[in-house]
Length: 543
Image: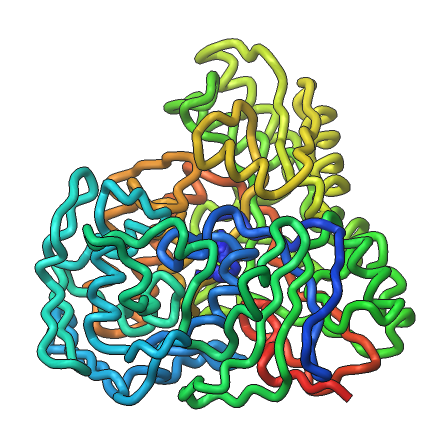
């Protein structure tokens, strides 16, 4: 999501978060607002970003959705996830994918008039990598030479050749490095973003200056917890066309309020139909709907630091909990076929996905085996306490959390319940700060269309969105081996082997893959939803 993302979540995703998403979210505040100046403004739903809009510090969907239309990167993704050069003139790898020469298109600029140069990228990436800046997406730059997770260190692997050319030298082979470059962490930044010490300022995050299809409508364009208003950037020089005057992204407190506004003509596009309308939305909206697969997986996480969930005891308890509820029944009854039970940690829309991985039984409903595993865990240390799953109340999660916890309670004979938080921002603050004391809802909306993006950012040791602080050297080694492969199929085989470890350890418990289930109003045309569930806003036209 992002993008918890938001990741392309982006997610980035949103976003990312993606869906951020680290967890993906599709809800924010229910206060609308007057849309801005153009006659062809498109209104859509969103959520208040977790923090300032700094690309390398945004990994959830609410912020990622905004950044992705305000900035233009080296690469962009088409509706089906195919990467296409945007700012990049060329990206050339050496023989073993440890060095990339990137040439950008000349003549493009940020909305304040500053030119986009090779240094716009290298300075932004260096800022993201510095430990003292504590950017959420710092780990995305870990393979660039000179990176140091623990202390500030210049990325010596970035070399500016001339105004439009730079070289990236990696510590280890990374065949999918070009595929990642459409993710928001790799966006360029203008000179105005940095203070005199070379760090991106918090002030910039409140009023970002981009180079993308849209820009802020003015000084008060971002009304926190209400909406953000973006206008078409007339100076955008990329390959995508913008067919409207701008976007007003309204932050809704819940999806039901957004759905009512869509039906009443106060909202043009909604990317998340509330569960309360799943049975009727296609009739309500008279065919102005979409229900298609997207690169989103939903999970919940129980950190190993919690009592009873470390070591072998924790592994047994996670497997028992995972086998205690029926994903097929929940996706059918609660989600009306808008979700698909998960059998891995990625998504069926991603190249290399498999439904036949070793240890897949750990995500299948098997109450008798669940009881057996729970008893084995009790033999190590008797259970005490209760299981709570925290979730954001503004994202439409209560029904499934109640169904899962009720089933766990009935199967294992323990106390289990949901724990609602008012907003996505509130729960993410506790998760990010490591102050949350319960299991918690998580999810991922891809930042870029590759298996690795569902694995490394969430489960690699020390990764930016590794909310449960999971660490397994064997898993990390398989990821590294996959990156060193120049053949895509060979790389995906390593990533599948890595997933088989995850299916045994269950650092997060897979639930289901989300479809993008959305709708649009009578005043808009040309509404297309992309591979990561986000509408292609620039293509939408007002009647």
